Image 1 (cartoon, rainbow, N blue to C red):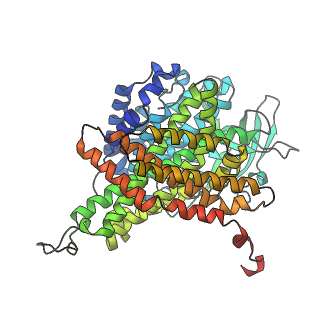
Image 2: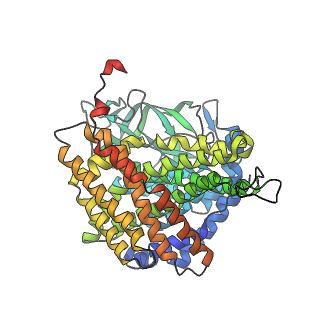
Image 3: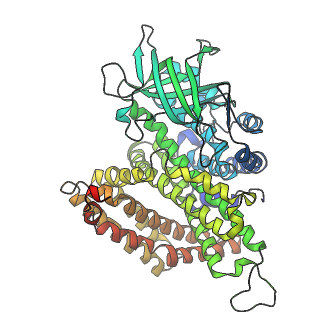
Length: 583
């Protein structure tokens, strides 16, 4: 298996020429003196080396060995601890963290690219740092000053890890049914008791402490509150004390992500501290949840990039058959075959447009955090609109990419030695956890699109249309392919909005198709944007590739928008007609 190589040229192109990151950073006071393009380039270059030389080498061995559970202790695969120590020492866990508490304060536009590299190199390893960063974000947004000062520095440094504890056996996505209890104590703390399942990074040997963010119910309350519960107690001086009634019941035996510990966690009168207001725990937890949703979308994106590299390299080396027009060779590389090219170009088109979506979403997060006034308000709405799309569409296409890459390998893709089957197994979960992709679609259509009567979607489309009009290096015919479909998307959205109250099953039945239509359409928009901005690139081959990939996307993949909108416009009658006993 060839070593992972980060697509640095594409990443820097997006930052500098497509989304003008230096201007965005320069106009935000919190970032203006923290980062510029030279700083970003240095960080990307170093992240590429770490992903290639440090993280990627443990990917396959970690999958083969997996996590073990011995004497009530969770043990990560060989090499994980050593790699994690170097990763944490480099400050990567706290890359986008608050500088006041030891984070590096880098923008999310940059952070999503660093995350992509790490996920491409090793999905399982990267989850540990991702959960920690998400927990720190939640504590920083909703925790008291005392909790921030006590816990954030060691989370940002990677000395401690974070975990998100929501799911219970009887309460999956419907958290109203959780049974974990929190009993108030005289000192202002709470005793937490209950069990949680499917807790990624719930325990491990990478850090000296794990800080759990636990959803629980107060006595005589149907509301849900959020609590910070350390595995090991922390005294007023920040020093570790005694154990805290937090134990591992077992670890899950999974289809993939074998190096990532997924635990059953038991809390037995564990001391915890309220985050935010009582009975408002879901509001606080969704700060972390939405962070993880974007991160899991990027997991799918990282898989896509890794799959493309592996399949592309293989297609250039594997000799099988002859070119359709004849050949002087006994056998040609399979790259000459149209079907292989179709798969590789599909993977690459989804991957590069997906990267554009992740960077644009990161830009909106930076604006929502650091801008002011109307710009801040609009960016916050765009983050809400795009987060479920980034999670669902990126992870769906990530699995598609892994399966297509496996198909390029043929029979060799089904055996373990080539490594491609691991990508299929590892990325399958991304469509399921942090809210299934169906739930993401319902959120997108029901809350983020029709929830404000299409205000945010219409504003977003208008900005895209304005950008299309300003493009000078793509044809009017290409622009029309996008603009006409934006009009059709809004028309379908208006149909759903007009009928959502009289037909309550409509949103649920049509949501996935609506999200997929939007995803394919916004990818088409990003492809024209990239082709336009690459026209005068100093590397002529870079420009040519972008234009040819844009042509392929517009002719072969963009028509999927029409299919999905047709499904939306067909309504829910055929979906809901069959009687329950006929299933």
